Image (cartoon, rainbow, N blue to C red; front, side, top):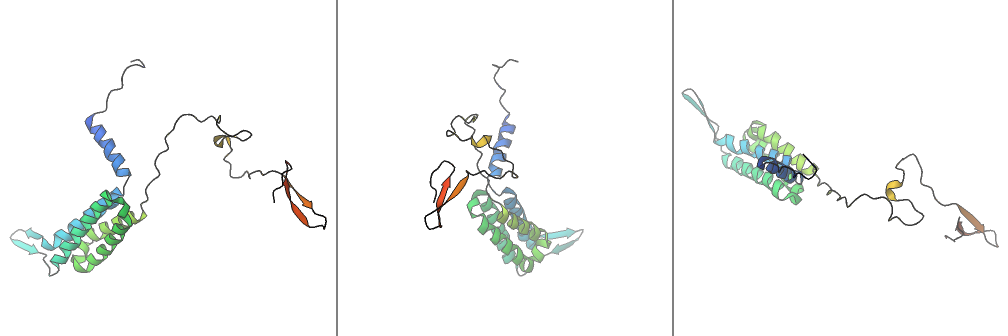
Length: 191
């Protein structure tokens, strides 16, 4: 294999996985997923019928419509967090409030499963902040374009224990003995 050999192209699965990872990194993905998953048990359990042998157990309540509305709203808020990440604060607050309301309305918040998932998803949406875009490296910065007499920013020591050095100053006394101003080391009047 020589330097001129073309690089093998990545497989379809690898390209899709990398594209999904890039998409996921630009939005509150986990917040949306947990909120969406929290809405499913809240909406499902009031309408579920559990069969145990010959006995069927229905968990339908009078608040079944309210549970369905809360569940659908949580699923919608989860999708909103994914596709409209600018509204993440609103969606997070709404998800937390709906999760709290589901405790009373929907079988203890979908038997605490939907409540906890929605609560954590809303909190993650509130705490998520978009990252800064990566800085494009235009090439190596060797300090050649730095102003004359100054070091390039990369050449400066980044030791927090080292205090910045300022030019020496001297105070001048006027005729009446009052301070008349300050002169920098180069003789230029500062103030």
